[in-house]
Each structure stands twice: as C-alpha cells, then as structure tokens.
Image (cartoon, rainbow, N blue to C red):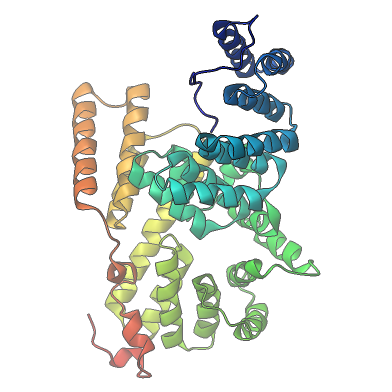
Length: 418
C-alpha cells in the first residue's frame, strides 16, 4: 500500500545535486526493490537520504527498504513519524505499516490500522482483501465472509477468495497449505485442522489446553457433533448454558444437543439462527431437515434437505479445486447453477467470470459460446448493480418463521403449515 511514485515539488536536493538526479536514484532504488536486490536498494536509498533526508518520497523509500530487509520496527517507526509531519501521507502510511505488522506478528495492531483505513475509505478494495485474509488465518470466519462479500459486490474478487466464500470464510483442504494463509492462533489452527478433516486431532489439541480460548468453545461443540460423541456434547451443552452469549456460532451444537434430547422445537429455533449466521452451514441444514421432519413439517424438511445437498456439492467442488488446478467446464456450470438455486447471485456471477477466463485459456467453448457467456455476465452484473441484492431471510430459513417460534410455547406442528 505504498504511495505511487508521485513527484512532489522538492526543495531538499542540495545545490550540488539536481532534482532529476535525486529522482533517478529513487527510481533506481525502486527497481532494485522490485528485482529483490535488497543490498543495492539499501545502498541507493542511503544515498537518497543523504541528499534529501526530509523528502517524504525518500523517507518512504528507505522505510520500504527496511521492510524488505525485515527491519519492521524501524520501518514502522520511520513512517509513523512521517505521518505526523506530513498529513497527506497518513493513509498510505497506515496501509503499509499494517501490512508490515501482519508480517511482524502484530496482528491486533495491524487489524486496528486496517479498520481505521476503512473508516476513512470504506471502499478501499485492498483493505477489505487484507482484512479478509487476516481473519481467515485467525479462523474468524464470519468477519472474513463480510469482507469477501464486499469484494464480490465491488467486482474485484479472486478465485481463491470465491472458494473461501463457498466454505463460509474458511480455507479448503488444499488452500490450508498456502504460505500466505498460514494459520494464526489457537482458533485459526483449529479451523484449519477441521478444514483438512482432522476432527479428532482438533479435539485432542483443544482439550489438551490448560486455558481454552472462549472463541474456540463453539468449535469444540461442533467437533463433538461431528464425531457423534453425545456424552461430550451433553457436557459441553451444560457448560454452554452457564455462559451467557447471544453469539449465533453456538447455535448449531446447542441445537444438536436439543435434537438428541427430542426437543426438536428448540432445535429448529436455534438452527434457524445458525443458517442465518452462515448460509454455507450444510450440517445445520441437514439437522434442520431431520428436526422439521420430526415435528411433521415435511415440506420445509424436504427444502432443508435440498439445501444440504446443494451446499455439500458446492463445497465438494471447492475442495476439488483447492487440490487440483484443472477446471472442468461442466463442473463450473453445475457450481453456478447450485449457487443460483441457493440465491447467492454475487458468487454465481463471479464464478461465471472464472468460467469465462478458463474457457478462453482452455478453448473449451466456441467463440459464439464465449460471446454469449460474456454477454450474460455483463447483463447479470448490470442487473445486480442496478437492483441490488438483499438476502431473503425466509428463504434462508426454509420459510420457518423463527421470530414467531420464539414468541410462542406452542409445539411447532400446531403452527400453520406452508
């Protein structure tokens, strides 16, 4: 997020050095940085600083060199001082130093600076991207999803990020090995283990902790559900009842315990909260289908079962793509159709773009088909941007009125059927 190499008027070059010479040195140092010739860049930046020690461009250049040499504290301190003396540099300084803080392991400070940037520039695509990646690494899935969805709506999202959306803000198995997505903290490592299907390992590591972070408790409950450990789930639920929280992330394991006890009305209420929190939660839809059937709501149960199948299929495709670079056009078409049925139009639109890109590369479509697909993408994009899109909460909950269920003690099967 360093500022572009603009040329502000400079009065810092001494009498023996022209402005042109100073700019030439700065450009040469920048080129050396791009070529990863850090020693050359450092020597050139030192010359620049001797010639123009108070020039903002020179200071930013030297800070970048320090950053490339992993001298992050010095680089951050240098730019922080620059921001105080040069207000116009404040936003670029916040962005660049936040990136260095991520590399330096100062994740909370980095997040704070990124959030400050968003307050002043809400549409900053790169900041949304940086925050999404940071939250994915920390296992903060819902927060990651918010920024990924913003990237979708801004029309600037990459295939890897689209895969993260398929998994509800989590990495798929193949993506967990990427260096730039290395997990951060206990929650991040637990989410990554679950993403790789290592459920037993995730539980063992969580239960071995002397002090378990509170934000891992709902994950542990989900692990008990997945491993079908009803005794541990029951004990987890008793502990959860003592924790006053309205966090919907707890809803799925709580609902699973209610369902095991035969209290399907309570389970349905909580499962509606769970799917509103995360529309990609296939396990919640599977359990919702079972509980709805148990209380004689076959139509809604059938719809929830359909959602489970559609979401599971999109996630199978996402996992395959994370493990294999090959892209089959027919599978991309199926993925797009599934997302349309799930009423996730922004994702569907951008997967159409991914399909077009691969079709162009692989010659998998004729020119007429390519032109038709490009035209469809343009039409869909125009319609979405003009009309906007607000998720239908009733659709997400399979037309179960969660609010009315919370306001009555009547059994669910006495409520009007769809």
